[in-house]
Length: 296
Image 1 (cartoon, helix red, strand yellow):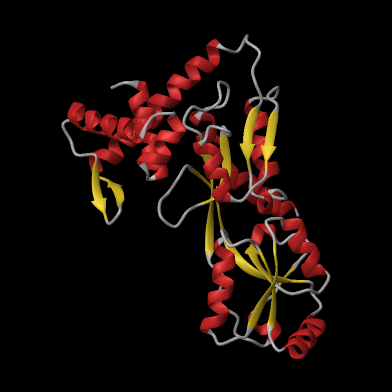
Image 2 (tube, one colour):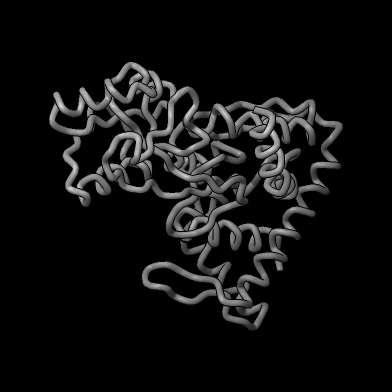
């Protein structure tokens, strides 16, 4: 089996799309499809099954995926060792603004433990845009919120969603009474918390209005701290905000969803930072994160 075909196989599994996989490995949609057919011919096994409009992995496909990741990891690591004497370009890392405060520093700490001399260029956008940048070859890896449709990449952290406010409960109650609705400060529409907040309040017949929308966590925190409304976000993104619980407000607020934060790799990777390094970070991150929370 060819390295390029295995790389395309991984890209297709992680993106769930011939088109997006093709963007990652710089091949046409038809070329990816042909590579998948050739892999099935070479293995003599069906690697995929249809699940609505999505492709799922058979048991044989899951078996091959595990080995493909291992083979690609060894391949990239061999190249990395051979290129150590060369001038190495920076690592291009993507991270949503909401994970910059707590998640990103821990990822950087683990990257520097592996590659202390590696420069890192950080691009902050929402998860949807970061996936597009990965597909377009603009990033080597990215921290993203896991999609509902499929697992993509390596798990860093499972976190709960929470409601956040500025801790002044009397002022919040007065604001709600005066306005006649729950004022909301939310992430943009691509964020799962945006939809969950609006739909959850609607289902509970709680009047609400989205007053501000932003991709920026610092903007959301500043507006909430200024008393402009409440927000829904990941617990790791609370920062200076206070968790707003239903018994605090006296209203049965909808329960925010749980999320999974992944570290995903671009198809071609970085010469000094490939899938093996990303997988190692995935294994180490949770303990490092929990230990830092205990210190706090």
